[in-house]
Image 1 (tube, rainbow, N blue to C red):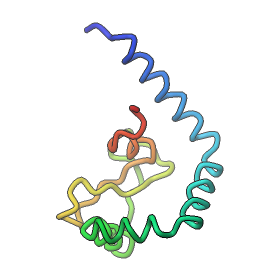
Image 2: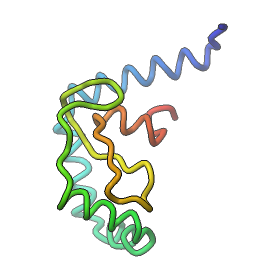
Image 3: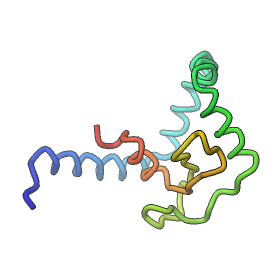
Length: 109
């Protein structure tokens, strides 16, 4: 199997981003919190435009316990819930933050 230069660069950038997030986790979270405080209209619009997702997130945070290990890589740090199908709000996977970002394609860009 031949690996292209573009694929190699993507993997390298993904690994660099993963290391940066691990080293700067609190700064990354604070930036996110600050944005949410300064722009509350984004959260309101998201809830209005995505009622099914909002309901699933609400139910999961209220009713469902998060697992103790990532179902993708086995990590025990920075665990989050992932809804593979929002029409089934009680179907939730436990994944680490990095795997969750990979699932949603945020690290491959």
